[in-house]
Length: 172
Image 1: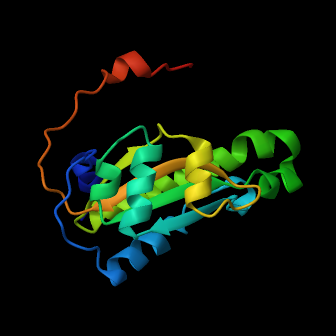
Image 2: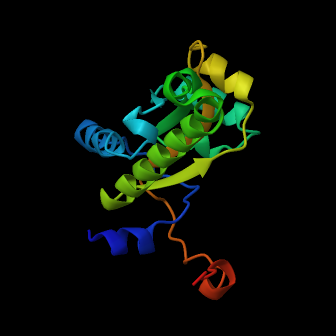
């Protein structure tokens, strides 16, 4: 799929068919994610791949009851590693760059899923503490986003977007 087609066809999907993600596709998605740009190339994030149905159900509960987190065969939990960025960039690195790194990586994963013929939905509403415990309480890491990945059980129409001239400001 061409890049612009990937961007045009990506939609947040909240209904998944009962079909596992093939290991080679998951690996390719993660390899693509690993190519995401990051502040100082530090890659100040970690990705937790959750395939276990009980853990995905727990993530759904931690995500304010968003059931589709459990229905997708894979949930990717992106965590920022503030100390990794702070070593080079101090407070701003720990406070901001690590979060940016995790969100850029999640975006790459979302686009890779689309390019591989899969669907995804980004989840940002969750209990940090509960998610942190579900993934094993990794010291120093902060959950930033959950990406549910699988095969779509629904087709979505493109979402309405703001007009380009309402978000773009040219400063000549």
